[in-house]
Image 1: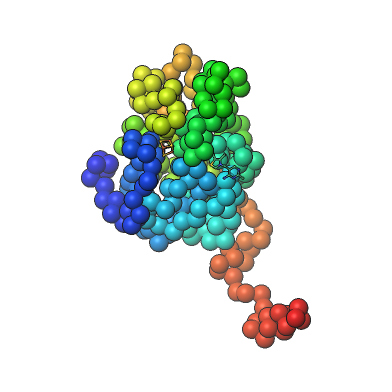
Image 2: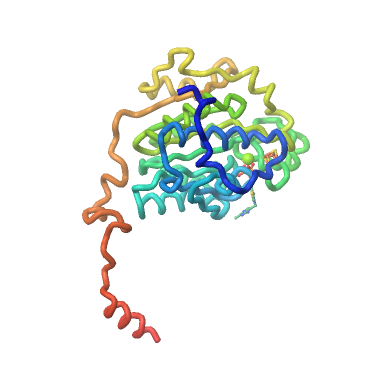
Length: 292
Ligand SMILES: Cc1ncc(C[n+]2csc(CCOP(=O)(O)OP(=O)(O)O)c2C)c(N)n1
Ligand code: SF4
Ligand SMILES: [Mg+2]
C-alpha cells in the first residue's frame, strides 16, 4: 500500500506536538501512525509507553492508550503491560538517553526475553529535553553543552548491542525518509517477538553535527541493496557501518522463535486479565478487614 494514501485519522491525538519546528520526532510520529494503520490496528488495541525526554512525549500526541512513565523505565512498564494483557499491541518509545543510557538494563533484558513488543528509539545522539548534553550515542569529538571541547567517549552501537542481546528483529530508520520508516515500523509491529527500530531523528536545536543533510549524505537502505535479513552475521557487518555509510532498513529478522509469553508457566491459566480474581468478595473483605 503506498504510504501516502494511508488514513491515519484514528491515530491522531487531540494534543498537537510541542516539539521544535523541524524536530525529527514529527516524522517518527507520522510514520508510527501510518504503520499502525497499515497493519489494520484499532486505536483501542494499541498502547504506547514512554520514558522521559522530548521523544518520550510522543504517547500524548498519538491517538491510542498511552503511558508516560519515568526516565529509562518505559521498556520495563511496557513489558508489564504486555504481560498483563497480551491482546494489546505494545509499543515502547523514547530517546537514546532514555533507552541506551539510564534504561539500558531494561533494554537488554527485554531483548533476551523476546517479549512480543516493539521498541522505537528516537536517536538524536543528544539529550534534547535537558538542553543538549552528550548521550550514549553521541559521536567522538562532538561538541555539546557538556563536552565543549568535544566528546571523548566512544559511542555505543545500538544495532550491534541488540543483535548480541538476542533481539529477534533489528531495524533502523531515518525520520527524513518517513515513508520507508513507516514500512519498517509496520514490519516490526507485525513481527512476533521483540523488535527494535532505532530511528535517526535529528534534534535541530542542540545537535548541530548530525543534521538532515549529514544523514542524507550517508544513509542507504539495506533492502534496496539486496541484504539478506535472515543472516545474523551479515547484520553484524552492516551494523559496523563499513566505509562510513550508515545502513537503514531491516538488519535482522530471526526465524519464528518462542516468545516469553508463550514460555511463561504462570500463563497456564491465561494472562492476568483473563484469569478470575483469586478471592471471592467475602474473602477479600475479610482479608482487608484483618489489616485494620
Ligand atoms: C531519573 C532521572 N534522571 C534524569 C532526568 C533528567 N532527564 C530528563 S530527559 C533526560 C535525557 C533526555 O534525552 P533522550 O532520552 O535522548 O531524549 P530526547 O530529549 O533527546 O528526545 C534526562 C537526563 C530525569 N528526568 N529522571
Ligand atoms: S530540543 Fe531537539 S529533540 Fe527536543 S523538541 Fe527540540 S529539536 Fe526535538
Ligand atoms: Mg536524545
